Image 1 (cartoon, rainbow, N blue to C red):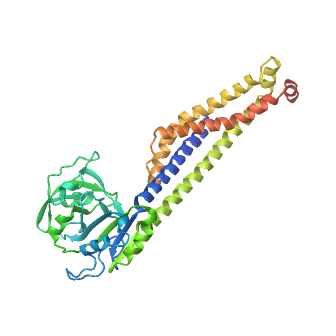
Image 2 (tube, one colour):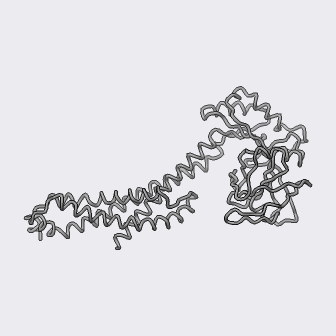
Image 3 (cartoon, one colour):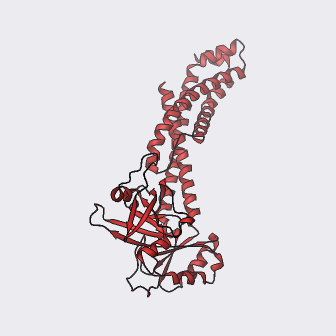
Length: 380
């Protein structure tokens, strides 16, 4: 039972680490696929995740809706597939315990990217709905989980249930709250998203913009379009690849660590099962010789050891299912990836058990086939 528990631990941890490596690599590939064709335009001198460059009177802004027209006229504009624009402004309310909030106006249907603790974070709807094309000029809003709780008294349950019949006042204009989002941190959950036209009507920013995102038709054209955009006056062009370099490096390190860790665990499990079967074979030399002396064939001897090692690893694999579920919860929270006990995890456990069975049966089968009854009797 000690051997079975040790082997079950090795198989379960091996399965979790393999799935962790695969999930992390998939997350990295998804990140690269989603951002590698995106170029972000900021006002020259603006800092990373928000804010304007230097304050200028309305109507004299270098970074404005006029910049959008300039983007459409760049020499390689035929490679631009989509242009997203939005503006944002901080809202201060001394009467509330959490005074800071960011009001963001964007085109309905565009991704809601909240300004998180480090960089942009995609906002996930947890109650109600997001902003769609029908809301283009509607007086509606989607608020963050913290904003909803602290300012509007809206509490979202674990199942996403929430009463969304409250009105939100922005600059004296009432807006209907149609959804609540979450990013997982309080900083990012303290925003309000409203349709861009509604934002302009409520705050009257003129032609001012804070960000423009350009999606290029293919990765091959990103560098060329970026160089064209950098020539625009009053504009800083930053590729998304530069923005996520740290995240990519971190995910790559995690993927490599889990991959090599899984190889180490596999090696430990393999050594364990081989060692146990070597001991079992040496203890049964006399038995093997006796069986051969009374007429047992090599195939029968081999099947006996194969059945034994399959029973050993099979029982360990069953217990490894429970081990994998426990390890998955712990490792999933550490890696920040979803590691659940699903079909893929079970297949990895079965494959790991069979691999260990193959390794463990090699020596006893080889030794049993080569052993002669006379040699067995002499050695005992």
